[in-house]
Each structure stands twice: as structure tokens, then as C-alpha cells.
Image 1: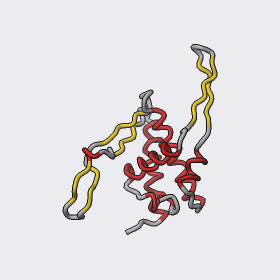
Image 2: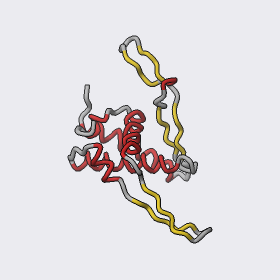
Image 3: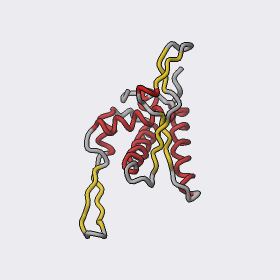
Image 4: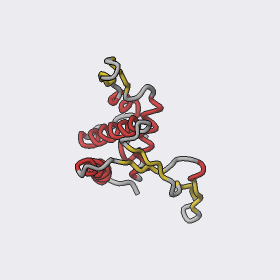
Length: 148
């Protein structure tokens, strides 16, 4: 049974608020996302379908190797929540372009300007949407209608 947009919005906002509250408590935010690997796939005989098992990826904000994906996840969550609040139904391509931009910062050590894209290819933003889907238990179709 599909959830209403208000129910979906609440789940997504609650997930985002939990990250915010962790930061406000001076703790490192960590996203736990079910692993979408073959080894973490289990057959559910009652539902007669494959489901994800208990393995989770821990995406840590303060881990340099994971911080970009953490940021991408929070950016995409913001875009999806904003679309639901505004009553719009973006495509996955719309979400990709709405979140695509370049950040610039100066590295003090070498005094050089560094540019980093939020994502370089749509496959990156698509994977982030899938992360949000499995982390929250909300189908993409429930999140945004058209970007399923």
C-alpha cells in the first residue's frame, strides 16, 4: 500500500532531522544504509521475493573517503524533500541537474583553488536516490512520482 506524500515527507524529514540532531549534539553523523550487494540478498519465502539482508554500509561524515557520498546523500534528500513540499514531481534527470554544481575552496597548504563537482555523472545521483530509498524504506515512486 502506497503512502501519502505527507507520510513520505515525515519519514524523509525525520531521517534528515536525526542527522541534524547528531551534529547539534557534537557527534559525528553516520548514515547507515542497507548494503545492496548480492551477498546481502535474502529470499523471503512468505513474500516470495528477494529482500536486503542485515548488512549495512556506514557512511561517516568525517571519513575523507566517504564524506563526498555523505554530502551527496544529504543534498539529494534536501532536493526530494523540497520537491514534495512544493508539490512538484521531478524526474531523476531534473534531480541530477538541480543538484549539480561545483564547489570551490582554497587549500591553505598549497594556496591553490580546488574545484569539486557535487556529481559528475547521473549514475552518481541515481545511486544516491537508491541509497535514500533503501535507508528509509520508501520507494522512489512514493518519493517523487515521476522519478521512479
